[in-house]
Image (cartoon, rainbow, N blue to C red; front, side, top):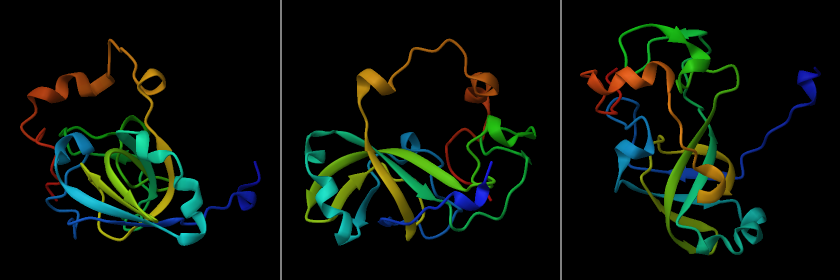
Length: 160
């Protein structure tokens, strides 16, 4: 694998009221109603055509304030150390995050969104529409998360 051939560029920036990790919701489900904006670089504005018909969109972004990669982490909804790839912790080899947010409106190259769980100023890598017939699965198990509902830290907020 030629890692040097991989290239990414920010296509915009995400603005939210979350200024620091502490107190920021860890998933959009816990950020219901929290509003923000996505400012897409004008060079990519034409790509927003036809997006207005979608209720939800996936934002793909760079965890630019990640503390660095760790292969074992203590997830925010658990007190047991887990393998990184069994979590959504931001300290990844490639610190890429994704969130399914509610699309409120589009004006030019600016998207008004809700249910935001990322920090203000987060670099945007991509936008994809949420399509229920492709993105919804009925699952019977979710690993260690199945027991996390009883965990006292399951309020979805960063504790650190």
